[in-house]
Every structure is written in structure tokens, then in C-alpha cells.
Amino acid sequence: MTTRELIQAEIDQLPEESPEEVYLWFKNLTHARQGQPQQPQSLMSKLKSIKIDAPENFSASYTLV
Image (cartoon, rainbow, N blue to C red; front, side, top):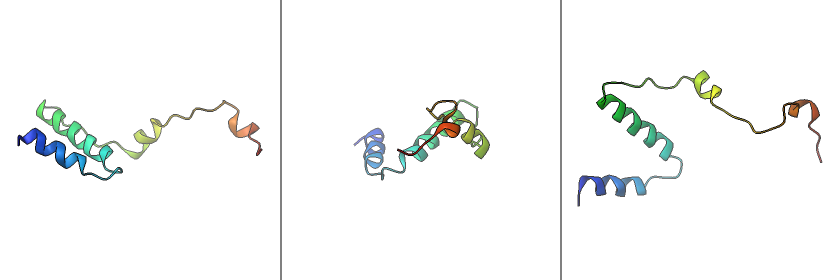
């Protein structure tokens, strides 16, 4: 079995909650190899990336149906 196949087998065994962490780890690894170590995202930068699909006046005009 090749190293790539071994890695894929381990990835396939991960619980559903883990892929985001693994992806970030791989991304950091590839940036480090390119000589660009990536800083971990701060809480504020993560919050800035949240997008909400709702009308602009959502909080003012929301009613329970």
C-alpha cells in the first residue's frame, strides 16, 4: 500500500466532526512547505467570515408563525 493510500484510509476512518481540523492541518502543512507559515485564525476573523442569508430588517420584522 502506498503512503497516499494509507493516508486516505486514515481519513476515511475519521468521525464526521474532524474533517475541518484535518483540512486546516493539511493547508498549514502545504503553506509551510512553500515557506509561508500560516497563522491560526483568530476568533474575530472567524466571526467576520460568517455570512447570514436573511433580509436586512430581519431582526426588526421577525414574527413567529
